[in-house]
Structure formats: C-alpha cells, structure tokens
Length: 375
Image 1 (cartoon, rainbow, N blue to C red):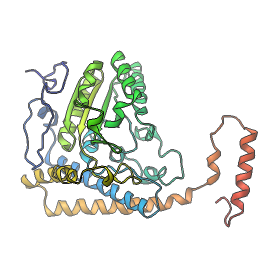
Image 2 (cartoon, rainbow, N blue to C red; image 1 turned 30 degrees about the vertical axis):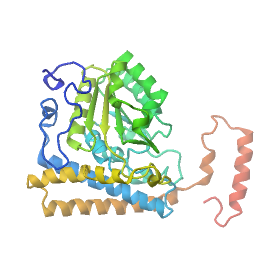
Image 3 (tube, helix red, strand yellow; image 1 turned 135 degrees about the horizontal axis):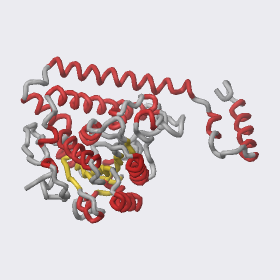
Image 4 (cartoon, one colour; image 1 turned 180 degrees about the vertical axis):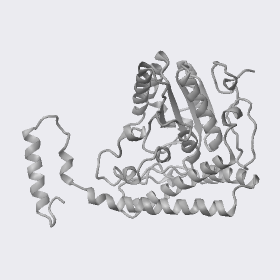
C-alpha cells in the first residue's frame, strides 16, 4: 500500500498505516514501520543522544520549577512530567520560521525554541502578564483559555498562505480541549481553507480530574477525518515516532496539503497544576503502568543497546541538567529586580482615563505607606 512516505496524498486515517505508531518500544527495542521509518532515517545515534539530553533537561526544568513553586518562589506551575517525548519530538522537527501556539504546559517546546528561563517563569512568578517576545522565537505566549490557541494558529497559517511562504503553524492542546468549540471551529476553518496548520493533541488521559473516556468513546484522532483533516495516532512517549509524525504533517502542509491532526497518546504523571492533587481521582496503578512506558527510559534503553549511552555521555547529560536547574533558579530570583507594581495599570486603556488615573494615584499612595515605596 502506498503511504505518504512514498509521496501519496491519501488521508492518514487511524489504522490506515498503523492504529498507533511506535518506533521505539517501551523495552527500548526498535520497531519497524514502513510508512514512518523513512521520515526519521536521517536521525543518527548522536542526534538521538541530543533528543535524550533534551528530555532529561526539560524533566529537570519541570522538577526544579515545581520545587520553586513549593518553596513559594512561583505562584503556580503546570508540570509536563511524562510528556517529554511528545514535546521534544515535535519541537525539534520544526523550523525556526514555523510558529508555535501552545497551552500552558508546553515548556518543553518553549525550551526547543530557545526561551530564556526568566521569560519562562515571569508569568508564573506573578510579575508580568506575558513572558516573552513571540516574534523573537516563533512562539506565542501560552494560552490559558482552553483551546483558543487553535484559532490563532489557523489564522496565522492562513496568513502564511497569503504571504506565499511555506512556514507552518502548530497548535498544542490537551485531550480536554477537543471538547471546546474553539478547537472544532478551528478545524472547520482550517479544512475549508486548507491552512498549513498542525493540530497537535497531547492526550495525557486526564482533563484536570476527568478521564478521557468520558469525552471520547473512540480515539480522539477519529474526529479529525470528519472535518476533512487526515489524522495520525502516535505513541506520545516515543520521541522518534512523534518526530516522524510531525515531519509528515509539516511536509504535507508545506506542499499545500493543508492541515493534519496528530494525537500523541501519553500520560500526565504529575498533577494538572501544582494546585491539584491527582491522588484524589487517579487510580494508583496508573502510575506504575505508565512508568513502564517512560519516554526517557525507553530511549535510554535503545541507546544502551547500541552501545552509545556511555558513562561519559550520561555524566555530561546530568551535568547539563544540573547547570540548567541552577540557571533557572537564579533567573527566577533575579526577576524581582524587574518588579514594578505600578505597571499593572499599563495598557488598560488606549487613551488616558481619569478613573484609572485616580486608582493609580491611590495605589501609589498605598505602596508608599510601606518601607521602600513602589520599588
């Protein structure tokens, strides 16, 4: 059967190639896939080590940020523990001129785009309403309104078409977001206008405390073909399979084939956010079951079987993760030097407003009543 890897433009409906694409099994052995292997045939062992390092580093970023929140340094944090392969595999497949629209959990994707650690933490420390310059790194600041970013990505992608460039937009969202009207409206629009956009769903099994089975009695990827959008269901804990699927979708978009929906089946090992207690709703056995599918461990086993994950490499990766954690903590504390409480009034109205000016004056007087004033 002809596949996209052979240049076919046929739809990738679930089960047409594989029901779920896996290239690295949980035990680290390499699985063959005629439809997807050609898309990662160029990935060398050294590049696999780089992907391994990326995942180790972003897991350390995640645990460090969680610790910072527990210590009162951050107001909130949305952990990505367990979803490293989905974010690194897709993020590393993108070009610098592609544009990312994410939710609040894609800190791993942000890392691949080169986001400064201070910018990554600015909003979560509560000192700014936005983190970074989207145009400097090709990634919009995280969307907290569930699913809204899919509309933004579709509009941006349509703009790429009008501009005559082959850049692609990618929207990241969770399984819960697929029940939102915004996501469905975005897919209708993207299909109608064949916008070069990727809808990347990280199905981490839980929409806060609700299991995915409540909102999806079939695979989530089954929905997209109803909108005229081909879909791929991929093992979201397999970094190589995620990269292959993303490359297929990118190639399709660049060649004028329109949108693609990717369902990356993974698992949220931690809480929804640091204000959540997953022990209240999640079966204890789930962690044990999904722990055997850990994305870092499975790639590590593959590298070990090839004799390339040496003690020297492991030490270098661990040292990099430690250095990143130190840099992140230092960047978090340094943000206080930028704090100016009066900026809360900036940008509320386009023109000066007497009511706002009165509030600003009263707030300034209130701050001045404390030692140090508004500084």
